[in-house]
Image (cartoon, rainbow, N blue to C red; front, side, top):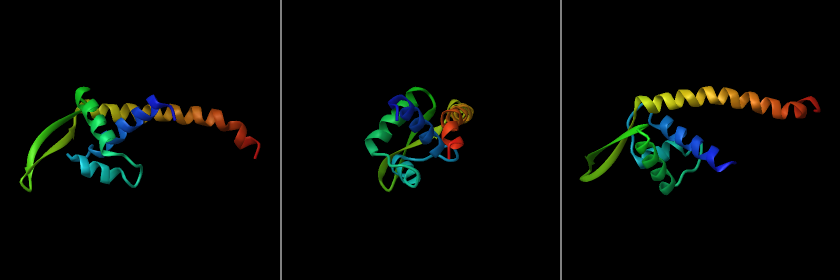
Length: 106
């Protein structure tokens, strides 16, 4: 898969993982695990990129005597998910075009 495309997909997946409630790194990885493998180093790179783009915010809170970073999606992050859904409709149409001969030849 194209690196830029994969990067964009992973960004939206991380936003989707926190769209309903704030979460932290380990929980995000756990929530995504049934769908894809994501290393901690990759996740934290994505989280930093999303924070810089103002698609999420970060707060620190104490949990069991340790500080933990919690991530919250912003309105811009929610709009990015909606944009992705619209883009995906176009991608499905392109996919149907590309595979149309395969379907017709079966």
